[in-house]
Image (cartoon, rainbow, N blue to C red; front, side):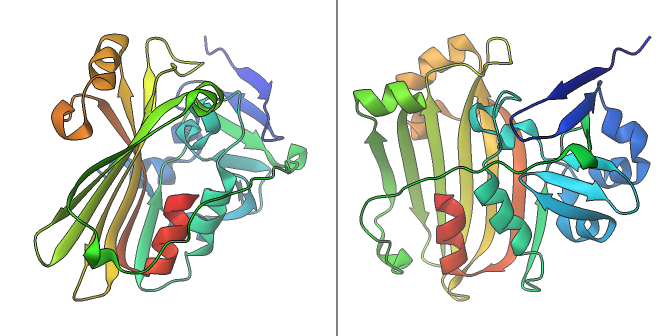
Length: 259
């Protein structure tokens, strides 16, 4: 017997769920996911078969069913929260760029009902110095930005770490947010947002950009808090959420990274 969950969450959509319902409802998406080692779906294919309603929701053409972005795209990585939809909107809006290919991860355990969809309005404000475009002048090595007490309590982020590597031709950057609060809907799981990108000096552009979640158990998180990203290694459970390959303009990289 299959237990069906019917829920309405903060993204304003009635959702029907049980384990791997997406794969049963859309076998063509299942085939696409099985062909990708990270189980991502090509965005060009997705937008031929579905219409993006916004905020992580894709409506099947000539149907009321929707597929939904993976819950790790959500704030706090849980169904209790809305998506980081500004990032998703920007990602989807780049699908017409013929210089790049884009892939994203979908939620396999829920489908949405399109007539119930409503948008949610959120506002964000950003402060700080402007970025410049001189990537090649960045010194290789690790930089840590520690949260103050208010930021740590409000965002549950202990610090953000950046590692730049330079081999003379390629400039690789890794970023990880170190969170010290568990995911609300998962047992013994601390999910840290992670980003990896590679800048090609010859192209004067990024030829690779991906985002993921590094998930740690409590024991591993205790170890992670006390170590730098360059010391902890790859001990986490890694879930890739999106990937861009090709020739990503520096301006687009800066915007995606911020959002």
